[in-house]
Image: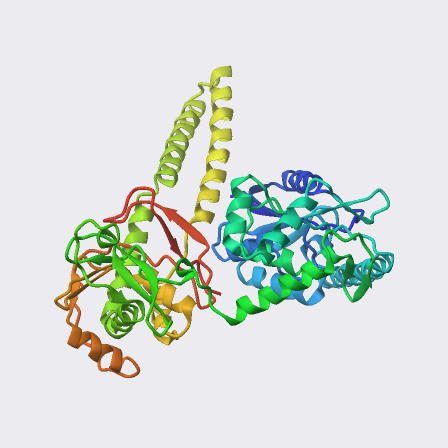
Length: 537
């Protein structure tokens, strides 16, 4: 059987004299061909240092090695694998444990003790080179900073001069002035972002403006001519775009904005938006706010039809109250052992169906079986003395197709998920440890489990969950009791015998949702996307 391998290539920046990704791949493929190794995947990290293991393609390669789809990793030289001896030893040990060895296209490492010593020497040199390079780069950047050079960093409103100093970009500087002046005059951050994006303007990174990028601009002291890089600060070290007075005015407004919540109700976090419905008319209930006689602000949900004056008389409901009911009921009732087990069963059933329906892999394997049968038949003909130019050419065609099919199958199998039922249960059980005072956790809990909530004026609440086809009826008395008992209640039964309607759509608690399954789960359209987590290490 042919040896099956993959290639890992890495190119870092800092104007180093090193081969490009393309050059490395070419040499590695040539090495593989000389040594009879079939390459089924390429893992490439662009502009990333080998000093650390924070390299996405490298980490993916290490994870894939556990799947048993390849037995060799080819890299250009020792320093392409790692420039840190600890990382090199650690990851080679993991690869070795998975039955995978590392080969170098441009450096011959013999087997035995001599090879171990040689490899250690090369790794030590790579680590020294990386540390020395980093020191030289840092020293050079500090020297540039003392001379107020850009060091390759350009912010909106500036451009790099021929001698690598900052100069005002008259095309984008007016945008910076506009941002500061509008915010100082009271225009809200999101309104500024929306207007800039509507005009097709973009940040220096090419993305749309958002609150984070806007705040970074509003806090950047470069705009008053204050050069800053690393630990070097030079007042007047670059041309100013705005006045110090305008900048300080904006800083005061930013501080006031942090101390006081926005007066714009639309910025409030209404968790049940799109999920809360009026039981009287079926219309969605939307978040809004108002002020009492004392001037206190109140957030509440109102029936959409009532808000549009279309005849519905449904009473408004306080935001805090209905959200606490839904969150508490979900924590108290849905996150029970039997429910978690049922959801885990549903997830595994779905993944099993997906694997069974993998048309690409099935068709490739079916075609490979046909090719092998044809090869076997041709061999019988040759053994019987039927050797012609046509049979020889046909045999070569089939052999080439066999190799291509085996490569394609190996690639498809690398893509296959590896997930255990215990991992699903572990993830779901982690919801129990969540803090209901944490806004991020509240949002994930609702998004993961709550499908819809219907509310009537007579006190009925119908909560429908994603994993079940049946709703859960909750009375006002039950709701009050559940909210009061959430810290340590005894729970209650929930009929969850309906079909699975969704998979968990949010990753959290540090787990990595790496794969995306486009497909159909009962009750969802064909373009729905479902996330699930890959094998945990």
